[in-house]
Image 1 (cartoon, one colour):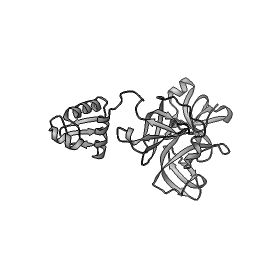
Image 2 (tube, helix red, strand yellow; image 1 turned 120 degrees about the vertical axis):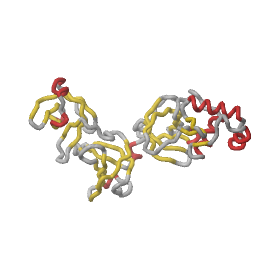
Image 3 (cartoon, helix red, strand yellow; image 1 turned 90 degrees about the horizontal axis):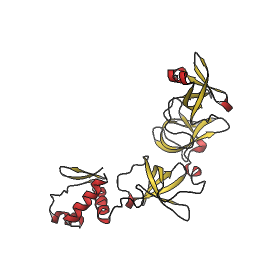
Image 4 (cartoon, helix red, strand yellow; image 1 turned 30 degrees about the vertical axis):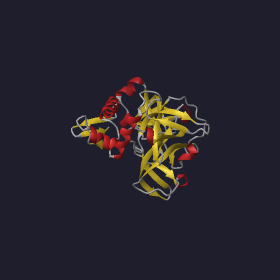
Length: 276
Protein backbone atom coordinates (compact mmCIF):
# COMPACT_ATOMS: atom_id res chain seq x y z
CA UNK A 1 0.00 0.00 0.00
CA UNK A 2 1.41 3.38 -0.99
CA UNK A 3 2.06 5.94 1.76
CA UNK A 4 1.82 9.64 0.92
CA UNK A 5 4.69 11.69 2.24
CA UNK A 6 7.00 8.71 2.57
CA UNK A 7 9.39 6.61 0.51
CA UNK A 8 7.68 3.73 -1.31
CA UNK A 9 8.76 0.93 -3.61
CA UNK A 10 5.98 0.62 -6.21
CA UNK A 11 5.45 -1.62 -9.22
CA UNK A 12 5.32 -0.21 -12.74
CA UNK A 13 1.89 -0.57 -14.39
CA UNK A 14 2.23 1.13 -17.75
CA UNK A 15 4.30 3.62 -19.71
CA UNK A 16 3.05 6.75 -21.50
CA UNK A 17 4.54 9.82 -23.15
CA UNK A 18 4.43 11.63 -19.81
CA UNK A 19 6.28 8.93 -17.89
CA UNK A 20 5.27 5.74 -16.16
CA UNK A 21 2.34 4.94 -13.93
CA UNK A 22 3.02 3.08 -10.70
CA UNK A 23 0.64 0.91 -8.73
CA UNK A 24 -0.44 2.97 -5.73
CA UNK A 25 -2.90 0.24 -4.71
CA UNK A 26 -5.42 2.09 -2.49
CA UNK A 27 -4.65 5.36 -4.31
CA UNK A 28 -4.84 3.97 -7.84
CA UNK A 29 -2.17 4.66 -10.44
CA UNK A 30 0.46 7.30 -9.59
CA UNK A 31 2.39 9.16 -12.29
CA UNK A 32 6.17 9.16 -12.18
CA UNK A 33 7.20 11.94 -14.63
CA UNK A 34 9.50 10.90 -17.46
CA UNK A 35 12.48 12.90 -16.18
CA UNK A 36 12.70 10.51 -13.21
CA UNK A 37 12.31 7.29 -15.24
CA UNK A 38 15.55 5.37 -15.79
CA UNK A 39 16.34 2.26 -17.79
CA UNK A 40 16.74 0.45 -14.48
CA UNK A 41 13.16 1.28 -13.53
CA UNK A 42 11.91 -0.12 -16.83
CA UNK A 43 14.02 -3.27 -16.53
CA UNK A 44 13.10 -4.01 -12.92
CA UNK A 45 9.46 -2.98 -13.31
CA UNK A 46 9.46 -1.04 -10.06
CA UNK A 47 10.73 2.20 -8.55
CA UNK A 48 11.65 3.55 -5.14
CA UNK A 49 9.97 6.96 -4.94
CA UNK A 50 8.63 9.69 -2.69
CA UNK A 51 4.88 10.22 -3.15
CA UNK A 52 3.14 13.58 -2.65
CA UNK A 53 0.57 15.85 -4.32
CA UNK A 54 1.61 18.33 -7.00
CA UNK A 55 0.35 21.91 -7.46
CA UNK A 56 -2.89 20.54 -8.95
CA UNK A 57 -3.41 18.11 -6.04
CA UNK A 58 -2.58 15.07 -8.17
CA UNK A 59 -0.50 12.30 -6.65
CA UNK A 60 2.97 12.15 -8.19
CA UNK A 61 6.06 10.05 -7.58
CA UNK A 62 9.59 11.43 -7.59
CA UNK A 63 13.08 10.08 -7.00
CA UNK A 64 13.94 13.41 -5.35
CA UNK A 65 13.94 13.19 -1.57
CA UNK A 66 12.64 16.04 0.61
CA UNK A 67 14.45 17.43 3.63
CA UNK A 68 11.81 15.85 5.85
CA UNK A 69 9.11 13.22 5.38
CA UNK A 70 5.79 12.65 7.14
CA UNK A 71 6.38 11.97 10.82
CA UNK A 72 9.73 13.77 10.89
CA UNK A 73 10.97 17.11 12.23
CA UNK A 74 13.27 19.58 10.49
CA UNK A 75 14.44 23.17 10.46
CA UNK A 76 13.19 24.66 7.18
CA UNK A 77 13.36 28.09 5.57
CA UNK A 78 10.26 30.13 4.69
CA UNK A 79 10.25 30.78 0.95
CA UNK A 80 6.99 32.75 0.81
CA UNK A 81 3.99 33.77 2.88
CA UNK A 82 0.40 34.63 1.92
CA UNK A 83 -3.10 34.63 3.41
CA UNK A 84 -3.14 30.82 3.57
CA UNK A 85 0.06 30.45 5.57
CA UNK A 86 3.81 30.05 5.05
CA UNK A 87 5.46 27.99 2.33
CA UNK A 88 8.68 26.23 3.28
CA UNK A 89 11.53 25.12 1.04
CA UNK A 90 11.79 21.38 1.69
CA UNK A 91 13.82 20.42 -1.38
CA UNK A 92 10.96 19.67 -3.80
CA UNK A 93 9.45 21.82 -6.59
CA UNK A 94 6.23 22.35 -4.63
CA UNK A 95 6.87 24.16 -1.34
CA UNK A 96 5.51 22.79 1.94
CA UNK A 97 2.57 24.68 3.48
CA UNK A 98 2.35 25.60 7.15
CA UNK A 99 -1.29 26.71 7.54
CA UNK A 100 -1.92 29.76 9.72
CA UNK A 101 -3.63 27.47 12.24
CA UNK A 102 -0.40 25.48 12.60
CA UNK A 103 1.84 28.48 13.33
CA UNK A 104 2.74 29.47 16.90
CA UNK A 105 3.40 33.01 15.70
CA UNK A 106 3.12 34.44 12.21
CA UNK A 107 6.07 33.14 10.20
CA UNK A 108 8.39 35.53 8.41
CA UNK A 109 9.77 35.06 4.91
CA UNK A 110 13.49 34.23 4.90
CA UNK A 111 13.54 32.90 8.47
CA UNK A 112 14.04 29.30 9.57
CA UNK A 113 11.66 27.35 11.81
CA UNK A 114 11.46 23.95 13.42
CA UNK A 115 8.43 22.10 12.06
CA UNK A 116 6.79 18.69 12.08
CA UNK A 117 5.71 17.21 8.74
CA UNK A 118 2.29 15.55 8.72
CA UNK A 119 -0.34 14.23 6.31
CA UNK A 120 -3.74 15.91 6.14
CA UNK A 121 -5.83 12.77 5.68
CA UNK A 122 -8.85 14.71 4.39
CA UNK A 123 -7.00 16.27 1.44
CA UNK A 124 -4.07 13.80 1.11
CA UNK A 125 -1.76 16.83 1.20
CA UNK A 126 1.54 16.85 3.04
CA UNK A 127 1.77 19.88 5.34
CA UNK A 128 3.81 21.10 8.29
CA UNK A 129 3.18 22.41 11.78
CA UNK A 130 5.27 24.64 14.04
CA UNK A 131 3.29 23.45 17.07
CA UNK A 132 5.93 20.89 17.92
CA UNK A 133 4.82 19.81 21.38
CA UNK A 134 1.57 18.23 20.24
CA UNK A 135 3.54 15.69 18.19
CA UNK A 136 5.95 14.67 20.95
CA UNK A 137 5.72 12.61 24.16
CA UNK A 138 2.40 11.10 23.12
CA UNK A 139 3.52 7.55 23.91
CA UNK A 140 5.49 6.32 26.94
CA UNK A 141 9.26 6.26 26.32
CA UNK A 142 10.46 2.68 26.21
CA UNK A 143 14.23 2.93 25.94
CA UNK A 144 17.06 0.95 27.46
CA UNK A 145 19.97 2.70 29.17
CA UNK A 146 22.76 2.91 26.62
CA UNK A 147 20.40 2.52 23.64
CA UNK A 148 21.54 4.45 20.57
CA UNK A 149 19.00 6.99 19.29
CA UNK A 150 18.70 9.63 16.57
CA UNK A 151 18.67 13.21 17.82
CA UNK A 152 17.71 16.55 16.32
CA UNK A 153 19.15 19.40 18.41
CA UNK A 154 16.20 21.76 18.77
CA UNK A 155 17.06 24.42 21.33
CA UNK A 156 19.85 25.61 23.62
CA UNK A 157 18.89 26.26 27.25
CA UNK A 158 20.78 27.30 30.39
CA UNK A 159 21.39 23.68 31.39
CA UNK A 160 21.97 22.12 27.98
CA UNK A 161 20.34 21.30 24.68
CA UNK A 162 16.79 20.11 24.11
CA UNK A 163 16.73 17.39 21.46
CA UNK A 164 14.04 15.43 19.67
CA UNK A 165 14.58 11.71 20.21
CA UNK A 166 13.68 9.33 17.35
CA UNK A 167 11.00 11.79 16.15
CA UNK A 168 8.92 10.86 19.22
CA UNK A 169 10.13 12.38 22.48
CA UNK A 170 11.87 15.34 24.05
CA UNK A 171 15.23 14.74 25.70
CA UNK A 172 18.01 16.83 27.21
CA UNK A 173 21.78 16.87 26.67
CA UNK A 174 23.38 18.50 29.71
CA UNK A 175 26.13 21.00 28.96
CA UNK A 176 28.56 19.47 31.43
CA UNK A 177 28.35 16.22 29.45
CA UNK A 178 28.70 17.73 25.98
CA UNK A 179 32.32 17.42 24.89
CA UNK A 180 32.27 19.07 21.48
CA UNK A 181 30.51 22.04 19.89
CA UNK A 182 26.80 21.41 19.27
CA UNK A 183 24.70 23.45 16.86
CA UNK A 184 20.92 23.90 16.95
CA UNK A 185 19.49 22.11 13.92
CA UNK A 186 22.23 19.48 13.92
CA UNK A 187 21.32 15.81 13.56
CA UNK A 188 23.48 13.54 15.68
CA UNK A 189 23.52 10.09 17.22
CA UNK A 190 23.14 9.92 20.98
CA UNK A 191 22.50 7.49 23.81
CA UNK A 192 19.90 7.12 26.52
CA UNK A 193 21.38 7.97 29.90
CA UNK A 194 18.21 7.74 31.95
CA UNK A 195 14.43 7.71 31.67
CA UNK A 196 13.15 9.39 34.81
CA UNK A 197 9.99 8.58 36.74
CA UNK A 198 8.24 11.55 35.11
CA UNK A 199 9.20 10.09 31.67
CA UNK A 200 11.75 12.85 31.03
CA UNK A 201 14.76 11.60 29.10
CA UNK A 202 18.41 12.36 29.87
CA UNK A 203 20.78 11.94 26.94
CA UNK A 204 24.47 11.45 26.32
CA UNK A 205 26.61 11.92 23.22
CA UNK A 206 28.64 8.84 24.09
CA UNK A 207 27.56 5.41 25.27
CA UNK A 208 27.27 5.33 29.07
CA UNK A 209 30.23 3.70 30.75
CA UNK A 210 32.33 3.66 27.60
CA UNK A 211 35.56 5.62 27.64
CA UNK A 212 34.50 7.85 30.48
CA UNK A 213 36.12 11.24 30.62
CA UNK A 214 37.89 11.79 33.92
CA UNK A 215 37.45 15.01 35.89
CA UNK A 216 40.73 16.56 34.71
CA UNK A 217 39.97 15.89 31.04
CA UNK A 218 36.49 17.32 31.52
CA UNK A 219 37.96 20.45 33.12
CA UNK A 220 40.28 20.85 30.14
CA UNK A 221 37.33 20.53 27.74
CA UNK A 222 35.34 23.13 29.65
CA UNK A 223 38.29 25.53 29.61
CA UNK A 224 38.65 25.01 25.85
CA UNK A 225 34.99 25.84 25.34
CA UNK A 226 35.30 28.96 27.49
CA UNK A 227 38.23 30.07 25.31
CA UNK A 228 36.45 29.65 21.96
CA UNK A 229 37.86 26.15 21.44
CA UNK A 230 41.58 26.99 21.63
CA UNK A 231 44.31 27.07 24.27
CA UNK A 232 47.89 28.15 23.62
CA UNK A 233 49.25 25.22 25.65
CA UNK A 234 51.38 22.26 24.64
CA UNK A 235 53.83 19.77 26.13
CA UNK A 236 56.44 22.53 25.79
CA UNK A 237 54.50 24.89 28.06
CA UNK A 238 56.01 25.47 31.48
CA UNK A 239 54.49 23.78 34.56
CA UNK A 240 53.86 27.25 36.01
CA UNK A 241 51.81 28.41 33.01
CA UNK A 242 49.73 25.20 33.03
CA UNK A 243 49.19 25.41 36.78
CA UNK A 244 48.19 29.05 36.54
CA UNK A 245 45.68 28.52 33.75
CA UNK A 246 44.21 25.14 34.63
CA UNK A 247 45.18 24.55 38.24
CA UNK A 248 46.71 21.15 37.43
CA UNK A 249 50.21 19.75 37.12
CA UNK A 250 51.95 19.41 33.78
CA UNK A 251 51.91 15.61 34.20
CA UNK A 252 48.12 15.56 34.58
CA UNK A 253 47.76 18.03 31.72
CA UNK A 254 49.64 15.70 29.38
CA UNK A 255 47.50 12.73 30.47
CA UNK A 256 44.30 14.69 29.85
CA UNK A 257 45.49 15.89 26.44
CA UNK A 258 46.40 12.32 25.48
CA UNK A 259 43.00 11.06 26.60
CA UNK A 260 41.11 13.69 24.59
CA UNK A 261 43.27 13.22 21.51
CA UNK A 262 42.69 9.44 21.49
CA UNK A 263 38.98 10.11 21.61
CA UNK A 264 39.30 12.54 18.69
CA UNK A 265 37.93 15.46 20.66
CA UNK A 266 40.93 17.75 20.11
CA UNK A 267 43.59 18.48 17.50
CA UNK A 268 47.17 19.57 17.96
CA UNK A 269 48.19 22.87 16.38
CA UNK A 270 51.65 24.40 16.12
CA UNK A 271 50.74 26.94 18.80
CA UNK A 272 48.39 24.95 21.04
CA UNK A 273 45.40 22.61 21.20
CA UNK A 274 42.01 23.05 19.52
CA UNK A 275 38.58 21.49 19.94
CA UNK A 276 37.48 19.46 16.94
